[in-house]
Image (tube, rainbow, N blue to C red; front, side, top):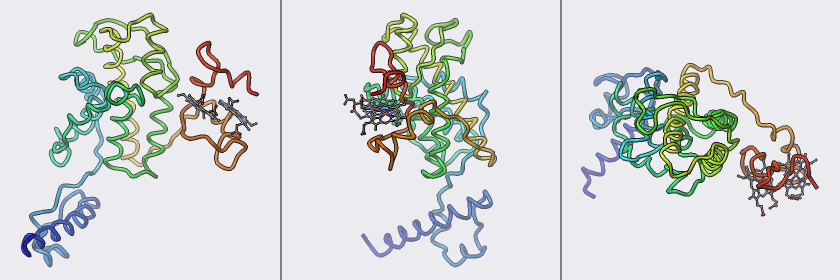
Length: 275
Ligand code: HEC
Ligand code: HEC
């Protein structure tokens, strides 16, 4: 690396840190000739636009999330993420519109068809993570995930703009943030084939549902009005013993225990039949 290009890089790094700070406070970048910026001419041209969270209109974004699911088969994770960050980009340009959105396809079908986390939730959590670190973000993610565990889906109805199957779909609360449980329990409860157009339509509508809830949380956070409120039954019933420093300190994670240890005919019963 030459001296000049090394200086450019250093100038850019300084600018990135300082630019983030200045933009974060006032919402506008420092102008040439002002304060600290005047002493460091190299950084002027290189101040990157800052990742500031912006309020969004959920009514506008929900159909975009729904349509995003169907775009080239990119799926739920892309649909939610693009409806949030892409909408910021359509209104405010950079840096939001610079994101390589199609990489979010990875979350589809619970990450590369594995049925782990519901990709719609991964898309929302990833959007939060662009603006907030772990301490701020965890309660936002927890509120969204708890809501997902407890809600009967789908709610959103695209009406005449349906891209898969039009009309009302049966709703079912699956109790879990996992794609496997969410999809399979809904399919079992409604007698639907997991590879069918109905199931895809359900997931595309949930993509809109998750975008709406995520935007509600994001807007509240931007307005300093976010306060988590949802709890699971297991938090009261199971965590007093299953937690760090308690009788059973082996537990990892915050998922509600009920779908897996709740004693349906498909699994063991720890709610009524605990040893
Ligand atoms: C009064 C304390 C207490 C409460 C409340 C409690 N557990 Fe446990 N549980 C234990 C202890 C102690 C073990 C033994 C495992 C260990 O030592 O880590 C255990 C074991 C388990 C195991 C694994 C072992 C097995 O026998 O299958 C599961 C699964 C489990 N509990 C689930 C739950 C769930 C779900 C709830 C809430 C509905 C719950 N527990 C509530 C204390 C408790
Ligand atoms: C997505 C399903 C799922 C959820 C949700 C879940 N568990 Fe489990 N849990 C499992 C599975 C599967 C195992 C491994 C069971 C085995 O080894 O046969 C396990 C293991 C455990 C163990 C260790 C004992 C053992 O049998 O291996 C404990 C204790 C436990 N779970 C408690 C809980 C509690 C308490 C919650 C809720 C806070 C919870 N789990 C949520 C599926 C789940």
